[in-house]
Image (cartoon, rainbow, N blue to C red; front, side):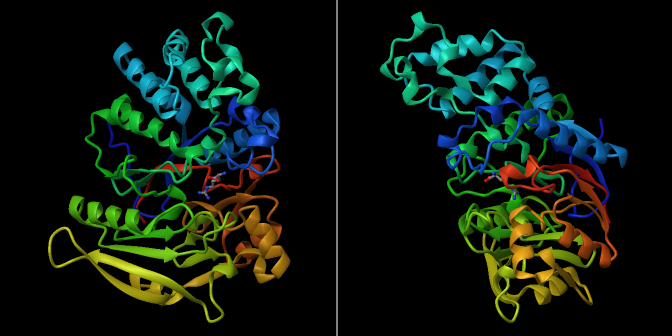
Length: 410
Ligand SMILES: NC(=[NH2+])NCCC[C@H](N)C(=O)O
């Protein structure tokens, strides 16, 4: 079978992409837990699914193969041993292993066929689902004080974050927030057990049990040789250095990791909320991440003289750094919202900078960000819009909602 992962840029023609269709996990959101689960509002399930299906079909119409996380995961549970191991892992990580409820939950999940088991784990398990006579602990009897054994995972449709393909390998990320930490377990199982991946000895550049956090929204493959990573609310400097060391040791192409500092705030949670690549020398940017003269804190990590070390040098201008590392004569930054104070803040909040390039100069964006979309078109970019009333409530756009598995080289 063909090698299943290959990403050497942000813009190479997209061939295969991983999505997750929002499911019942978003109906398990309630106002009380919104903030902890990283949502701003409760999406209406049939509507968000309809929008998501439109997004998937838009990609298919362009000849892109769409594969779903839930399907790959269910197909990875190939035998009883893997099923049992997965259920134990997920229960343990959901902190459901501390009481005898563990055994009831394990029995409950293992009684289901794979698709249903995966759906259940993703959407959460309510205490009311387990039969009364099996409840022996105070926290189970006093259900109203917390309704879940297993929390729902409403952020799963942002497949970009828990893992990212870099070159022919993968970074399985350590999520910063508790609400998302279990998400990367799925990709971990898929890589190890799914027939499409398991036989290929896929290099893993970053492991989910690493102590310091790293998220895919911060990881941008700028070229064959250069990876940019945001130092952000979610991604730590320690994790970036570790990723760089693993990359330098494990492959020959990527020789530069560019660490780009962005403000630590919810609106800017990842680098891709303020900066994405749309063409060979064109990038969207949220003007607010640049200082008055365009300055920022940027560091370039390269292999050090001695094995297992990195050499770090500082830069302070985004355009100059991009020119330098990509060998470009000129670089165009397209400001989200056209630089208008109100429009740029509004459209950035609705992921106006969060474009998904499906080929050089061709992007998928949310329809609502009409100022940014118009500006992209004026810069010669082909913009394919998708509806976004419900999808946007989770604070992520087309790039966050997609994990490229295969792109052509550019
Ligand atoms: N790559 C991204 N920008 N992802 C956005 C993820 C949004 C999600 N609600 C979170 O807070 O984690």
